[in-house]
Image (cartoon, rainbow, N blue to C red; front, side):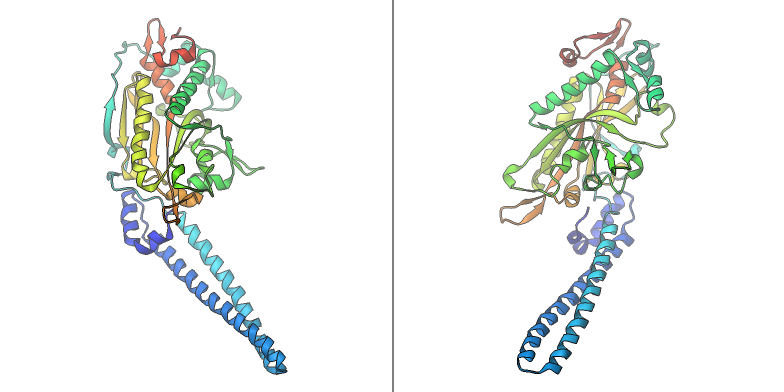
Length: 423
């Protein structure tokens, strides 16, 4: 959430930067500032009323002591009128604050200066590319056919048990899932990320803190009886560990990693681009979260990008890193780098990670703060990234490593899988 201080001091800058995200913020910004002006006016009048009440209260005691009952009764009537007005002002101020907060959450985060102009994924900028493209035979199979051929993923059984988008992993397929999760977590913890195992259901406050609510209710599964949301990503519970926390500068950076299943409705997703593992409603993902001092958050972002790149390289997959344009960024992000791997049998790039800096946007919603060198309370910066999301990684691994003998397993995974080929 953007701060009121920023909106008061630089409203035109906010409108200009949000235009990069193709978000017209002028009316909302004006309405927020109008509510802020009204709230402060109510507060000023309220302070005056309370001050007058104190003055009259002192007078009443003195007048009663002097036997001036009539004058004391007049003062009492004035106090009663002031109390009534104070109660009215409290209600007006609270209503104005609520309207102001309702408007504030409608504003996305400002894209930083490095974010390129553009409206769609076609306008994203490739900043780096690596890995070798595999040379597959003409009769190479897409991963959903490989999954059936080797009986490692059963999409039809998932439909029977739950519905489309909930596959069942079997045998070497299930072990490959577990191997990838353990590999990612091991590399993350060796890089200094503390492993945590959070709940996979969160309350509304947690969803609000990281910006999923009220922006993405339609994409989240909701347990109405308990008012809990199934997590769309481990980012939500892990970052919320530090909701309403004030850190000392020496506690930074805070680096955490977690594995969770993730749940997303993704309504309206149809066609060949979502076949097989390309888009699921339940999937496994390992996440990294980094809490930083503001002046060091972009250095942290570079380190996170390099870390995720190391993971992808280790798997031997062709990859590219894209800096997202304003129109393709998330609501909460100040800058995002997407990682894509090449799926050879499908002939297309598949997104497997997003690494983002949210600057102070999430921290303001979370009330995640720190004490600076002067003892003043400041907002921290938050970052996170997928390291990695499994479904499309598995899709690319199966397709790119298929041979007449079977599917070769990358060397870094063999100690985790216990096998080097799926046959």
